[in-house]
Length: 302
Picture 1 (cartoon, rainbow, N blue to C red):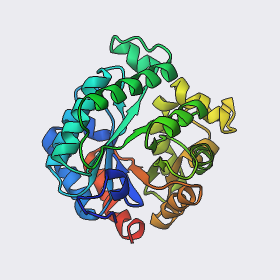
Picture 2: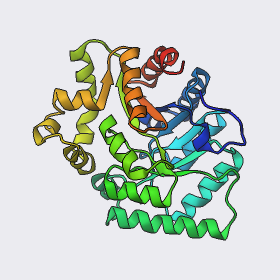
Picture 3: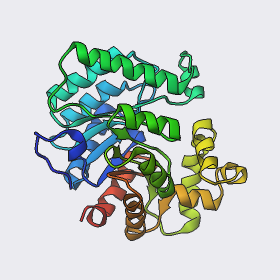
């Protein structure tokens, strides 16, 4: 369980285990707020969410912060292509001032097919992120930051983005990765920066059922070059990322089984250098995801 002292910055309040819920972007605000409040009551240290069509990241974060009292709310990620750096910094500092030590800003370059669909020019992701961070630095210099400062992490998968996260931000938030990737990322980051990977989970003991659920989730991600290239660099083969993913790939990316098996996967990330792991339970409704979080809490948060 995380330390709830308001004097601590968000990265020090995260604790060992948090929650990642992409589904919050697709449910009414009241349902998302109620889910956030329950996740806090269960004792998880953070709640991460993505930015999707229909819900703007900072407004959404404000709603979730208002619905809770202690938990860290983190963007995973705020898309750099949909607002300029000055606006992102102003929004982050406003939330940091209103909810001291409880907001963490995750930034990312998203994916070319998704960005192009929104009418933006994807450009060169690494250059764009570096320029964006320059803009945040300039905006922060012009106006005093919140106290404690709002931490910034990058959705960094590959070495150059990890190095940028190390040199310019508080750390990295890799998504859809293995403990082996966590070890490689920690080696690149060094000892100081925060490393907070996402880990997808399915609380299901039946292999066929678990893998069917996992494949349905993975299919869209494996079609995105940023993820597929990263997996190939990790040692998987083209046949592993085809047709929804091989058993080998599915089992590496999605921890399935009982609570003890899932706890072992989180322990593997921590042994590899993770400071904080955000679990994403798979389910076709938020309530089914919450049911898994309730069952997992006694084992994962003890």
